Length: 310
Ligand SMILES: Cc1cc2nc3c(=O)[nH]c(=O)nc-3n(C[C@H](O)[C@H](O)[C@H](O)COP(=O)(O)OP(=O)(O)OC[C@H]3O[C@@H](n4cnc5c(N)ncnc54)[C@H](O)[C@@H]3O)c2cc1C
Image 1 (cartoon, rainbow, N blue to C red):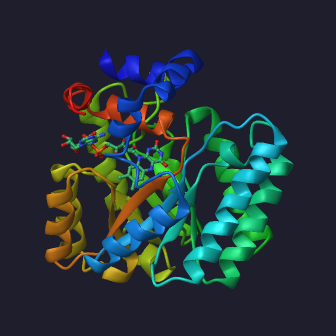
Image 2 (cartoon, rainbow, N blue to C red):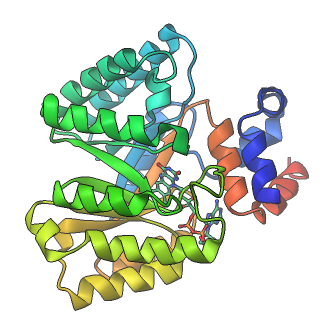
């Protein structure tokens, strides 16, 4: 029930306006967000790199409703790529298509993505397209394949969510295409005719999809999997699979969110696995923060404790 409440609040403008005015909310959100500005994101990336981990940077933003904001979001990514190129910090990028104008026009979004991927190509960088709610799954996959096949960008990846019934077919196709995929459980509110309502089924599907995707043939085709979870059961199953089937380390990595399960991140790193942290930055933290609360309502205690801190 709390999960549904937070997912509802993540899209409610009145709640957003209220939270943005409250100082302690912003302070609390910073447990999950590296900072408001690009220099803070670069500093954070450098620190994480020095601790032996990889980074993907997300300039926060989604669901923009005017063309100027979509262009601004694309410009922010060009600036990010430029800044990374001129620094000793190393990170790939992650973004959302609704941030780049998908709700306004597919063409605008595609143009923005092409600008970003061109720049990323010249700086030797990689961009992963986050997956949003299931209303966007088809169009997101379609834009991803257009960029990859028609415009021949080989520096773009996509996210698949284990809670969707359709994901088995999507993962099968992407494995045979030798794609770069991040697999996560899924963070949005979905109806039972599209997504498994029970967490145990989502967990079982996550393991199944990891094993389906990371097969020797797909690895030979260049398929790459970002195993994005903080769930120890998922990590144990993935590690057993890659060991049993001798899956090369160049075909997968583990991914976790900034500010979540730090000890587990370091443990995986110490076990010799590649670990990439998803590091968001920027002022548009509200919906991202609400989804983090929805995943773990116990985080509410963390908010309440901050309320009483100066
Ligand atoms: C790198 C990365 C990228 C992602 N990209 C997307 C995307 O593009 N689209 C999308 O829909 N979702 C995305 N997600 C979110 C994902 O779908 C899940 O909602 C989220 O990862 C929680 O699921 P879990 O696998 O950690 O398992 P869970 O079963 O939810 O959690 C396992 C354990 O992890 C810890 N944990 C999990 N979440 C939190 C939290 N918020 N705060 C504190 N502890 C927590 C708890 O200890 C919990 O018991 C991404 C996740 C990661 C790690």
